[in-house]
Structure formats: C-alpha cells, structure tokens
Image 1 (tube, rainbow, N blue to C red):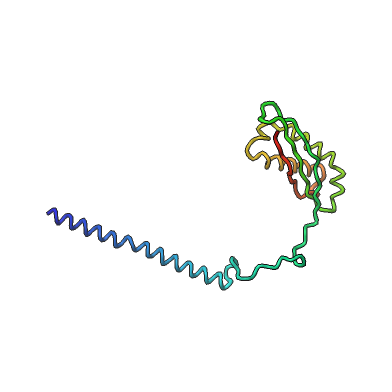
Image 2 (cartoon, one colour):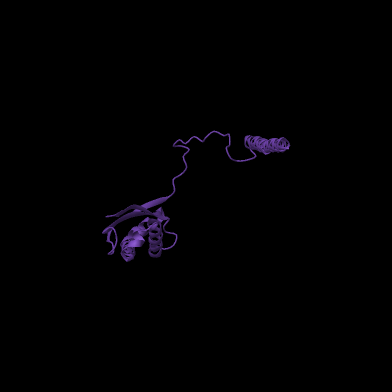
Length: 166
C-alpha cells in the first residue's frame, strides 16, 4: 500500500513538472514574436523610434539659430538669516533671461527688482531657506516678483548663479 501511495505521489510530481514548463515556453515564444514584430515595425519606419537615418551634421553653417535673448545680471545680495537658522547669511546672485527687445527696460528697473528680492529674502524663515526644495520655491517666488515689477511677457526666467549659506 505504501508503494502505491508513493507511486501516485511520483506520478503527480511528474505531471506537475511537465505542465510547469509549458508557460515558460509560451512566454518565450510570445517574447520572440514581439521582438520580431518590433524589429519589423522600426526597420520599416512604422514606429518613429530608432530611425536608421544618420545624425545631422552640426557644423557652424547648419547650426540652429540662437534664441534672441539677453541675460541681465542681478547684483549680489547678502541677507542676514533669522535667529535659529544653521547659517548666519545667505549670499544670492542670479541673472534674468529676457527677450533682447526688453533688455533696456529691465536694466532700468533693476533697483526696484533688487528691492523686491531683498524684501522677500529677508522675510523668509530659517525653514524656508534651509528646508528641502527651498531653492526651487524661492526661485518661483522671486520670478513672480520680477514679473510684478517688469510686466508679463518681458522675462523668460530667473537663473540662480549663486545661493550660498554661510
């Protein structure tokens, strides 16, 4: 009787081993079919990825035109940090990216821009300056204040070139 039970168990194990290989072969076959279809689609241009065209020649004659922008430097601001901060001072400088046609307008308004920026930076708490993601938030708020001073559409962005906590 014991031999019959062991024979039945061995028969069940053999049948499970045989059926367990079927999904692997099926998955392998589907993978190969998918690779073949993908290769065919890309090589015939049906999918725009991986085009077989040579890279464009990037010589001076064929280089794309530079955008018509100017970068106006913001004089360095040094701000005392509030009590409880790990650092004593913040040294900040940056540049404003503007369309070339508005360069003179923005340069004329630079003292007002500095005043707005200085007031904002001094109003920040230690956590606002030293916290995670602080530089990103500060850049957004400063850029919004620059837009308030010079007007909408006259600035493309604020580039922070120096943000040093001492």
